[in-house]
Image (cartoon, rainbow, N blue to C red; front, side, top):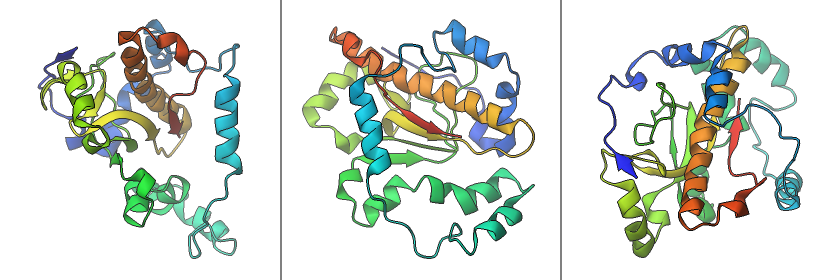
Length: 232
């Protein structure tokens, strides 16, 4: 289903650090738990299929940049220079080395990534909220409209609505089915805050896939499968 989003001032028009405020409270984990989302590893584990997919990702040969700040002779100096610096500096120097830009890779010839689109510090205004706070990842990736056929878009239409509506399947007006988010934090206890932000975003991302399969009564196929990724 779709609905009109709220008219509150977008947090992406405020200082970057301000968007983290709701997640500084450790009780945010409890809020997510009441929505059926848990920041913990399930005792049931994941399926063999998901394990094999992870192993493929880990064992696949990756192209290493020749002149990056992670180069052996530069790494220690890089770490010293970003110590005690703000999020913007860490994002500039480190983030793209850990999570390369999907769109940049597509521009440089990775045609299999042409179907993807990314957002940087963009609020997920078009996603139906589960808490008062809406996700606003430092970096997120999902599918662009052109990734779908006209028939698929027609089928999604009643559930997506117009550009200003909210939906289970949209993050922003241009991003369908987000599946990767990254959060950067600095300072004491910052990693916990980033994890809560990512957990919130991933809850909504996974919810979209589950709702899609639920509409066609195939949600059991998703049980114990990995549906999204996040990096803190």
